Length: 257
Image 1 (cartoon, rainbow, N blue to C red):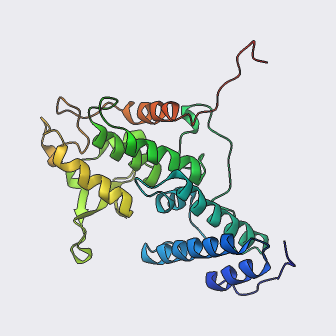
Image 2: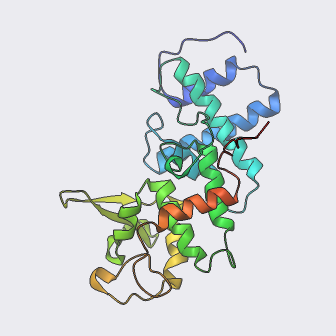
Image 3: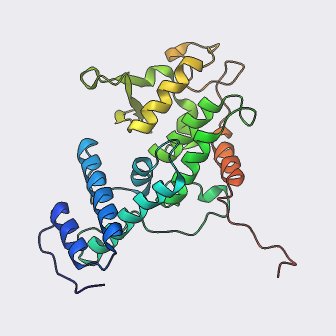
């Protein structure tokens, strides 16, 4: 690593240039890192995210491209991790949102706040690849998982969602792109869908089973019988997918060496 330069201006573009100028990365790596971080910062601007206040799931949703090689996702995450490590050393950010974390050991740790971007991206990829016969309702599973991992919704919040909670911002021209959520006091707030979740909604809605109860448009996520999914369904889904893709840390057995 080259000599550190104390940066006084926290403009991310200037931080990026200072980071690359003081790094000892090989030329090709430096070029790839620069390109990835520039794209990440542009994404933050487009999605109205504060680059210095993002969470791990924001990076995961940006880095993950359905169908792309896992190695490409890893490179994008590695670039942001290194960039935020540099900015953190200069006190430009309060924490590194892309920092590595221990592999989860059980379902209690399968939450956005407990996962790092790579772990989240692994789950997103597994949800994308999950299809028949593993899941007769794989589009529902994908959306259910994305809502947990991408928006940080709890199982109870997901199960309570109705079709009428989906809204459209006409000036964006994206179709359904916003979700209405209610707090404990009944106050509503609108949450804009990141592109991947917007796509997951669009893929699911044409296949959604018509609900028996049409109050509020009926439950958003319906079972094959046309009723609301059980409250334990979202948590069970993430645990099953994490186990299938090998993300969960193997617990030591009594006679393990």
